[in-house]
Length: 203
Image (tube, rainbow, N blue to C red; front, side, top):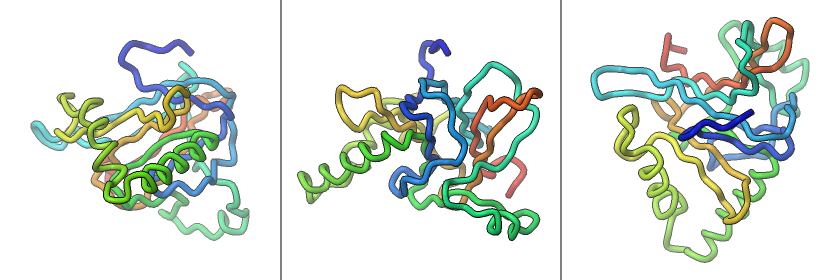
């Protein structure tokens, strides 16, 4: 899929995707796999009031086809018994404790965690977000009219010279637990992966 100017894109070398709080990635990708490649990441922004916007949905777009139905994206290790135990309104999602969500590839998650560990070892008095990511967020989106001043999204490359990246974004109102869904077109083909931050319409 061709990249458009100014567009966020995600490199998926294995096609095994992780959606998580970037500081609590547990290396459990979703059970479904997509074709390796580079795909657009789109953020759907909700206007709360004048000059106040929130990231309501974040999605990876795999095709120009329109999604007609969605199913809950499940990580590896979730059993059929666990799925059957879900009650109406319940879901399997990922927890957020840093006010951020992200998409990345399972290969990149290993690189990212190693980069954070090395940063902590080399800079024991510094913090990876405050002393590295905060400036990236501000440069990436802090001046955007639909973002907060500190920046609501960022395309982070944990190892210089590599295409592996982590696309990060503010998680709606902040901390919580959020579901992610596979979107399928009318033929049953996966066309998107989308996280709902429960900004529009409540939980």
